[in-house]
Image 1 (spheres, one colour):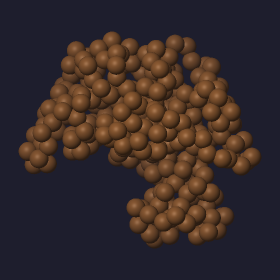
Image 2 (image 1 turned 180 degrees about the horizontal axis):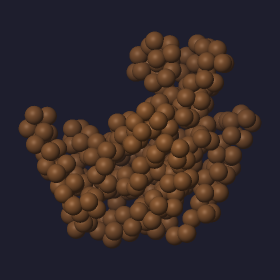
Image 3 (image 1 turned 120 degrees about the vertical axis):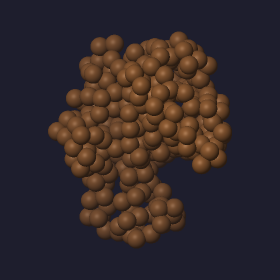
Image 4 (image 1 turned 45 degrees about the horizontal axis):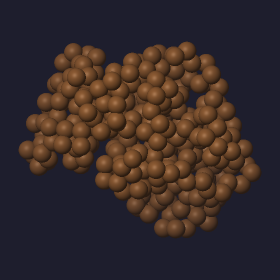
Length: 307
């Protein structure tokens, strides 16, 4: 396997490191426009491989020749979200960046699967789908895995239980209109609705929605990268190892959940071909309405794009 990570900032470099540590590829290519940054970070990761006992070739580049024939391309490039900045504020700048990266990557790896991490996530995944011309099963956005991980961590801390026993589902767009589903969120199979009050659940749901900006407000000059990189690598691992995991991902819907022509987070089976199936779960009227509103928010942002 050969995997390319576009963007050598905190998210991209940490993603590359995790890919190497898990030995998910024979070769990992780290690409960035800033001269020296991908080369230096790639070399640093290589020098850790004897300690970690991981035989993976890591290449840093400012161009795309080295990315040729990649099986998976992970796009993390774009400016970071700053305090006071909404996800929509990122859209115009990052759409141009993601468009350029996608065109360059696809020219060298026309058979690749693309995973988009750049924000605003759902809209940037649409950009990658549109300019790549790929089938929808080969362009997927990383959002729900991260949002669910945040929800899971908050639930575990609240109940003082192991995160291993906590499962959570978060659907919808990656942002203020995301749709955490307490009914489908469990601790050792027990719904959290049986373990905590409605007020506590609502507090954790709100914190999950605000999870990204909470970290931005702490960091001041950056945004989250440990959890986003772990979430992207979980998707890559399911594809590389054909694990068929059911993970919440941003998918291009064509009638599923009554929605069409928009990217929105839904449960997806990920295997060697990419998105192998969209799992449709039963939603109550309130949940369906919240998901429809989230999808409309994404659609509205897509409509503003000029690509």
